[in-house]
Image (tube, rainbow, N blue to C red; front, side, top):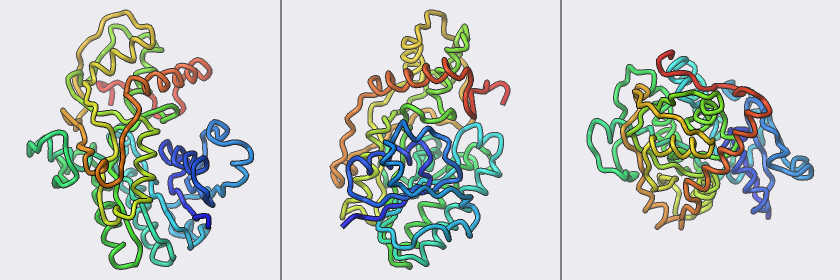
Length: 339
């Protein structure tokens, strides 16, 4: 029997890639729900596939929007949220309002349904203070306490909403007869990932011939996860009988410096100029790398795409985009000094 699957945030970068995976690899009735669908769907689905998907466009910060959804889904992927460093620094009030409303409204809707399983997507930013201030070991596992660095700083408004979401979904599940699993994503990237993150910003800046090229937070480290690996880990977490009530890190353990990333993008962009070290963005942690041994052991999750291979296809997509469109669709790069 086909499973009925709902992807909340189905127009987002990871959400639409999960949908693409499900269409190609699972027999299912698929619904994608989001505020708006702005991506070119033909890049992800055939015309026949588009015709078979139920697209629900509405403002789900309003409880009434959930009336448009069925109540008998087998699986719900809850990815809906607003993210982006620029958003947290410029409109933290909206980050808190939107994400909190989405979480609460979704949970209240779940109380009225027969949904069997929910996957809530969280972030490594939920323990930025754990590694930065409390000196917990890196790579970091799922058992560390969640902790931010400064509750007054707007940079952490997104992380705070994800901490709320983790607790809320796990505890509602205990009382309202559905299973919940949490996945914490770690720096997922890939083609068409939007314009809020470091790699699109780098391509935009190289395209604009910035020279010397400023390297913000050059000595910080991250572990980047190609979107195909993130999607596979998400689906494994949803479908595993051992995942209910558990938290998993979904990412890659290849830790690299931001300086290394910048120069790799520069090489792909044909840049031959000088690089200049620059300060980091406020609230940004010095190191981040997940311990994914639990996901490997319990889910059989094994990342397959080396970051350099994934970077090539990602940079190529953005080079093509900027050559055709000239500027970012939204949330393009803004100099740290001007934020």
